[in-house]
Image (cartoon, rainbow, N blue to C red):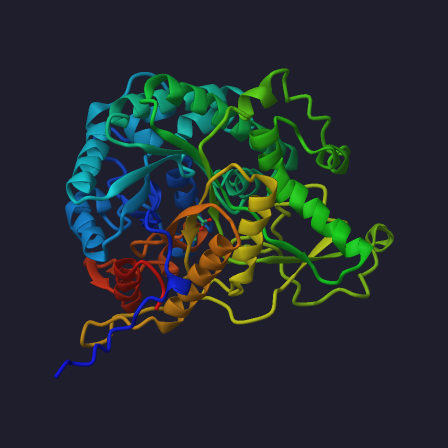
Length: 492
Ligand code: FCB
């Protein structure tokens, strides 16, 4: 008699392409700790997290998930998951303290050991060069609003490319330059905490320039087969109503949130409407001849980080100019993606749109970040890019959710909401692939609970629980679920 096989089967409908890259993602400052070891100097996040009131509970990344000392344990976790790829970032002040001059070999050695351990475990390393930890000395010299920072970044890219290029084949220059520019320099809820809208626009341009310069620098030192990418947190922007005014609000946020990077990097131009929308702030004379050609140096793929959609509606300029309250205003209006957890009176991270656009909470269930759960936004973004950049392969380089997880007395961590979130978003990726989108991989954010920027350790995004008092790791149900998905090559 044959036993009934009760294991869920993956039907052709839910199977991902055979070469699909299944990964998880982390970032240096969020997990490494060892903030003052082996020659590392402070980054802007070390400084920012020490400033009173900037990060919830006064948390810092000094110890974080202590990954610097537990790297082998964490690679073993990755191996247990069965991932094909692992995305991590290199800490700039660890390998080039102060952001200038020669590399520190002890810092680079950590990443050499990590790459070796990953390769020995059969996992492909995916390196991000910049996940927000600018050396403090470069901020003191002007930071990203200062043009010279772009050149410094290219030098740093050369250092890391030379050290790891023989074993790392997939490279990402920048993670989410929108957040780094607009949360860092306009709303000030991220490091370095400046609130100058023009500085943010300058930073955005210098990120595009730094990206292009780094692509050139990497091409000079990497083997030919290497893939170079950029990761953007593109906004899936929707109008509250299908009116001309609301569609214009969408256009403005799309320009400042998406096309400010997509147009320079893929088309070598700045959006005309963005220049007009921001004309009262700047004439963009910080964009020099040749910069946009540099920014559009060809790349091999585009990474997309997606968590939730953005809904906007128009504010009438007459209402705004009158100083009277907007009659349509929703008292619970969403401040829009970005503002930190406890800040009040935070300036807008959307320079030039404040009097025109209002952010509206999207409906539906929410994560512990209060971010709406809506997987259709991911499908919308991916299929938009299929149409606009048909030749560019895509990777979802971050997607995931925070929930208030805890280990129960038996040591288990049950996180069914995260499983539901991940399932819905992977299904959206699958639908996008079936609709002809070239999505090559998916990186779940995050492997470990970690330092969630201005929220400190209060938000848990990991599929592995970390007890920050003991650094004990506990695999959550979602990790087992993800391992099963990877093992089957698709959703059940
Ligand atoms: C993204 C960041 C990542 C993480 C997630 C939740 O914006 O790139 O470091 O904090 O959000």
